Every structure is written in structure tokens, then in C-alpha cells.
Length: 268
Ligand code: IPD
Ligand code: CA
Ligand code: CA
Ligand code: CA
Image 1: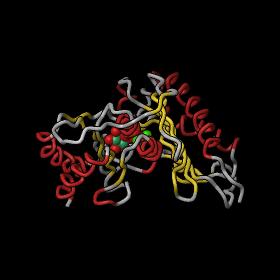
Image 2 (image 1 turned 90 degrees about the vertical axis):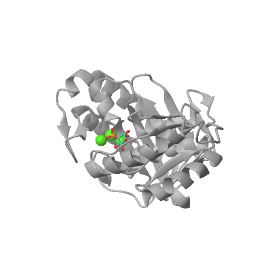
Image 3 (image 1 turned 180 degrees about the horizontal axis):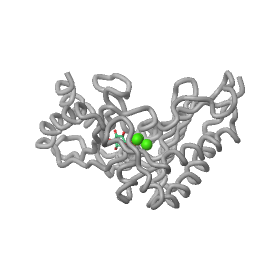
Image 4 (image 1 turned 135 degrees about the horizontal axis):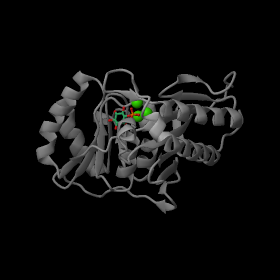
């Protein structure tokens, strides 16, 4: 099996994410006039989400035609005609923060990660508006625009600024609101930035002390999760489970333990 170099995967990811970000920025005015909804009436998708996904997949197909992609808008498929046995699986969120995009709130991002043998080995998240770009290669640290990142060292709930997010389904939101009702009095404050990928990158550089969210999809968390881990955070589910749909909790180890203890009983 040919060896894939994670740094080369990252270079390709960065190149494609930058191109997609340019396209998204150019299309904002036109794209927000064509909003459709998906899973619920609060779950938007625009022409720009679809165009950005296509642009990245076309770029992957040109560079690595035997690979696979799991993209929010197009699902799981080969990037080209047929997947090769040693395919890299790419995880793509073409716009993470579509609601912010629609409203012109400058917190939406392109997120792209490369997974080899079930392990995310490289990832990039780019804020389309500010141009901030976070990257990581497994084992080589997390970086923003040339600066090495370290997460927070806050170790108390009372001192913790915690990011979270809410899903699109009504029942999920009710449950998330109930958890928040219990957590908010115990912590410094909550931030709901509106992009899981940017939340994870914020935690990676200590703009948030921690982040948790239930209901994330692999494309929401793959790149940001690696970036947060490489910045020294623990990124898991509750009680040592892997991060996943049930929970993604990213925090420095001591704070992670406190949040795990606090959130576990609330998630039955
Ligand atoms: C959403 C954002 C949001 C999070 C939701 C995600 P989308 O992704 O990341 O912050 O709370 O769970 O679905 O739909 O904007 O790509
Ligand atoms: Ca979406
Ligand atoms: Ca998303
Ligand atoms: Ca999205």
C-alpha cells in the first residue's frame, strides 16, 4: 500500500479550503436569496453550501481520484469514478455555520479533514470572513497562521468560558436547553458561536476554555477535533467514549473531568 504523507494531505486540504472560501465570500449575496431547508424548518442550505462542496470534491478528484469523501451536502461517495483500496476518506463541511452565513455574522468556516484507516491525520478550518486558518497534522501540533496553539489551563467550572451549540431538531434543542439551565449557573459564561468547527478551534487556542455539543456529525468535528487535540485538549464523548454523535467534549484534562462529571448525569 503506498504511504500517504499527512503533511501532503494537509497541503491539499489547505489549498482547496482556501479556494472554497473565496467562492463562498463571492457568492454570499446571491446565495442567501436561494435558501432551502433540510431536516427541519430551522436547518438551512444555500447554493453556496452546495457549490463549495462541489468545488472541494472536484479538487480532490483532480489530485487524488481514488479517494472517498463524506460531505454534509453530498453524503459519502468516491471523489472520482471509483475508490481505490487505499483510499483516504475526506470529511468535508463546506460551510460550517450556515445560519451565520445567511445572516452575515462573520463566523462561518470551511472544514476539511483527511482520515486514514479510520484515524483523522490532518485537518484545516478556515473562517471565510476573517481569513483565520487553523491546521493540524496528528502528532505535529495545532497551528493558526504560523502560531503554535495551546488550549486553556483553566481547571474550575466557575472559571470556565464554555462554548456549545444546538442541533436543528426540536426535541434535541429542548434537551440541550435543559442541560444549559443546569450548567450556566456553575460556569463563567456560555458562548454559542454557531459553528462547531470554529468552536473547536476557539477551544484549541484558549478563546474558549471548553466546548461541548451533542448531535454533531463527523464533518462538523473531524478537523476541529484534531486541532483541539493537537493543542493539548482532551476531545472525547462522556465517560471515556469516543467523541461522536452522543457527545463531543473538548477541554483541558482537569476541566474535562469536571465537565464530564457534570454532564454525564444530565445525559441519562
Ligand atoms: C451546525 C453548526 C452549529 C452546530 C450544529 C451544526 P451547519 O452546522 O456547526 O454550530 O450547533 O450542530 O449542525 O449546519 O451550519 O454546517
Ligand atoms: Ca447544515
Ligand atoms: Ca456543520
Ligand atoms: Ca454545513
